[in-house]
Length: 108
Length: 115
Image (cartoon, rainbow over all chains, first blue to last red):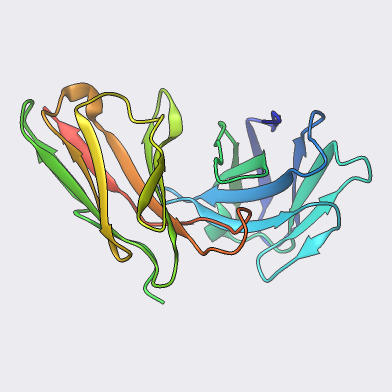
């Protein structure tokens, strides 16, 4: 399965957009990009996923580069409740493997 | 939709005791997963069921661990006998059928402490 690389941590200001990068240079053609997050003391929460096209839902937007070697998760207006560990995962079957993720801290 | 329900939320037991963790998946979901999370190893997939049948148990650490899914609305993960190194948060997740790319929905986990 393709490996992903994410920054260990990042801070962002409340009310501003948070842009979370993920590199997945070895992604294969049928592998999806998934984003999950884990708020303290809770289970991982699905955010969004995509294959080639950019995707948007009520939580976030996912921008995938044309060569699919990287992607960015965008939280349009970060709130304090968005403080969490964010996981970028690349996979094409049931076996989602969670790495260390990016610890995002939203500051007032 | 109540989400994936796990019980108990916390379990403290002594080494050597049997521990049973329970999970109720989201109604209509036909895939169920058990994960374990520790600081050292992060989130690890233990076992995956599809239509109540275990498909992949390669992540089960050893014979002390067993999992069952007697019907579509209930699953258990049992550790017998338990050891201190089993201390972790155990998550259950379920997924709707259709495609293997459907998202997973996780419960809030059972925090197990073995003393």
